[in-house]
Amino acid sequence: MKILLVGNGAREHIIAEKLAESPKCDELIVFASALNPAIENLASTYHVGDINDVQAVREFAEQNKPDFAIIGPENPIAAGVVDELEAAGVPCASPTKKLGQLESSKAFTRNLLDKYHIPGNPYFRTFESDEGMLEYAKSLGEFVVKADGLHGGKGVLVQGDHFKEAEEGVEAAKKFIESDGYVVIEEKFIGQEFSLMSFVDGEHVVDMPPIQDHKRAFVGDTGPNTGGMGSYNYAENLPFLTKQDLKEAHEITVKTAAALKEELGAPFKGIMYGGFIAVKGGVRLIEYNARFGDPEAMNALSLLETDFVDVCTATIDGTLDQLDIRFSKKAAVCKYVVPEGYPTNSRKGDKIEIGELPEGLRYYLASVDQREDGLYMLGSRAIAFVGIADNIDEAEQLAQKGVESVSGPVFYREDIGTAELIQSRIDMMKSLRE
Image (cartoon, rainbow, N blue to C red):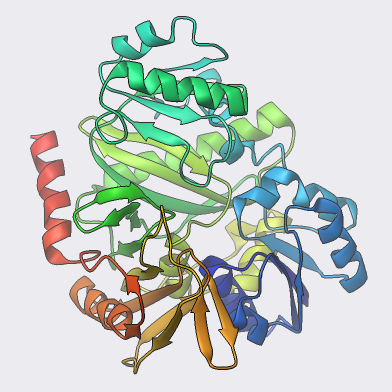
């Protein structure tokens, strides 16, 4: 088969690796917004262009005639790349623009869950103006402001973290109305967040292992929000979750997939990535994404034992129930190396070097440029290191050796996957639920 991949980050690097290792993949062709040297090595054709330019992606597909496509990032999905590819006769293991509203419109998803009586929603209201907003926000106690559209991880502001007074939150909400037309004001949840990504073919939902991501830049969950500094999973469930928590999260995704089909008259095909939070009374939905998480893709796909090409074709064909999708029962810890100053004032153009790495450690390239004399950082997350082992301690130590091997003006979060950090999560949930 000839397969088209759109995107060029570390998430797309591992997608490319999983596709390329399948005996069913003869050619991997890539449409990217920048050169990723690792993906280029795996691809037979690598084209750099605007991944959000739907016509350009369609023309590339028409020239190369892939058997199917998969889209890595959210913006091309929201722009309608899948719609254009399908119009050109290329099936996709990613959702169309209207189904991708699950991620691209926070108001759409909250209203969908509300209309179809799906559990997991907070108390919320959508606003098109600031009329009554302050009163409503104050009535919730502490609240969260969510931009309706895509803001690259910067469209969610939480009281106590990003602003203190209600008036400050409302001022931020007004700016989101200016940019997006809508804003969502919702209650603030107290608990532990986790990611549950699922393969969805419109009818069937197959969950990946539960993973915890770390958005804050600095040790101890401090500093500004980022695209994600790293993530970890256990061989079994995350230790602060119950089996019931996972069951509830799964049911929310199953019901949401059914509601999407009912509401929009078409099946959601691709990855439904639920950002959930375990709270005192069960599980609630923070948001859905319509693609693999980054860094969570590195955990899940590292552990996927089933041929990924088979998973993609079953997603497209609606036959996920006929495929035995397996993940190895191992722990994985992913840690990102990022440039000094990231995410607010990143250094750019600095050379970095990767030292000697232990066996069993993998790495995935993100925002880097390969020049004749080595790797140079381009200003965003640079390299993701993934340690995989039978237990979390060994996986964390492997990932830590990876980030420590990089020389140059970089930093990373050494606490991701450590016993101390995870114990704090366990203690928090225990005290919440007592």
